[in-house]
Length: 77
View: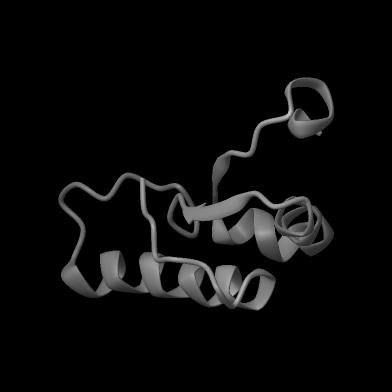
């Protein structure tokens, strides 16, 4: 982990799909003191998509992030 080498903490922007596929990775990041941010659920292009699609991408990822870190702020990239 990054803090083992440099002694710093970071914010990692991850996709919801990655958190579902490898939930342990997100939990390890949080346990090490890092923060999680949303990189949408599927990382598909958001341009020219419906409002419902965009909302779903963000909300689904936020739900995954809250499971990994209930104290997380809703950060998006």
